[in-house]
Image 1: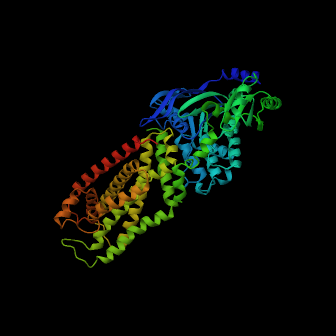
Image 2: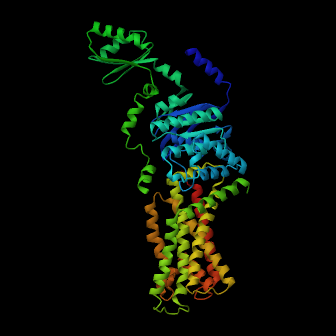
Image 3: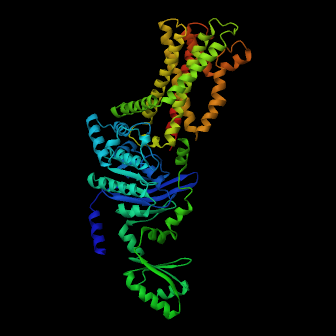
Length: 346
Length: 253
């Protein structure tokens, strides 16, 4: 497994970096939303920007797509500077924003056609591209219907199709499946993978869904409070936490952890209020050992379980808190004001 | 100006026209409201006599109502940038490789076109009710004033839209600023007979718009000579468009 990772890494080194940022920083009235972000995204990869709400993901995307001016630092997309060569950057990128950005009083086809015109695509190419992207996202039958009658998932698909209209080198997706049901999310994941494969589009996506990053991305950057904590491919990140995670709840968690650390097979550990976590290899085989050791110490094990690590464990490892926890706390704030307004407006 | 910029202007204009044609309720309300003014005020005040009024009241009122309908419609277009901002569509336009100027210009053209269409509908109805245009040259001057009023109001609307966060603010501006200015503009009754109102009117750009449009259309019943009205309205129009596109240019998402 480890060898496999190094091999893929060496292949990647031949690829060209397509997005490069250098100490990108954005400050709003003294509040630093994005702090010293330096990263490089390579051609043809699906790169994930993973972090809780308010971590600075959207601000970063807005800077990279020329909508916001960075306070400090710089970035290039396909060699073009995001501050001094805005038009060049705009030509080579496609963006799907977090908030729907469609004209709902127009039909799906009109939305695509107007978009293509603004990118200077000629009539014949326009027709062909509209046909292509609509069939990619299965919206051909709905093309002449006003967008306001579309479902949430259909709107999202249309936006993704629109992002692809002008064959961008990089496609930015800001929380592509926010607020969609499980089935639609999976369909959208399939489209994202397909366009990455068929058009060789580099994809930069932000998400706070661990499973989304896990399923789609080659590499992720974990971002929290405006700073990048780590950038690596998912396999390496998970290995860092341990191949398997054992969760133990016992009558004396403190005692058990001090003794467990004497075992050289414990790669890392976390102590929580009511349980402890150990990162180990071959977790199944370690369970009997743990129970044995606990019994010899006279500690009663209440429960013990083993599971594969998730990106959430990685996030926890770096920040000391769970991204899921974060989101239950913020469930109220999760709906942006724009959406709330939208609900009452119609 | 290259091909892409022309396309962008065209797209912004076309989008506006399509939305206008499809939005039946807006079409009905923007035409119905001026018609109510025309019919109700027109028949209600027909028997009233205003000192120094050289034409019948309906003829006096028609240019005022046309101005009002163009003003409201254009201002609405300018402010509708707020809608695009709220619904996120503005971002889509702003990441396109076209200049902000083309976006704003296309939009302004679209707003002015729809406002003029409405203005012409009211004008046609007024003509059918017996208002007389003084001549061909007068019709042309009328159109010039209508265009200037439309562009000024779109510019004003844009400025307001970039400063406002929500629609309640727009309502406030309509009720507390535009309505009083409109009543003091001689759109519905002559204001120059009373010294205080006349003095206020001198500082009211809407007054020169209405006065100019009335003078152009009827060839009479206006207070100031047409060139004076024209120059003041033209300057105001340029200023509004300038401020409007500057504020739009400066605004960040």
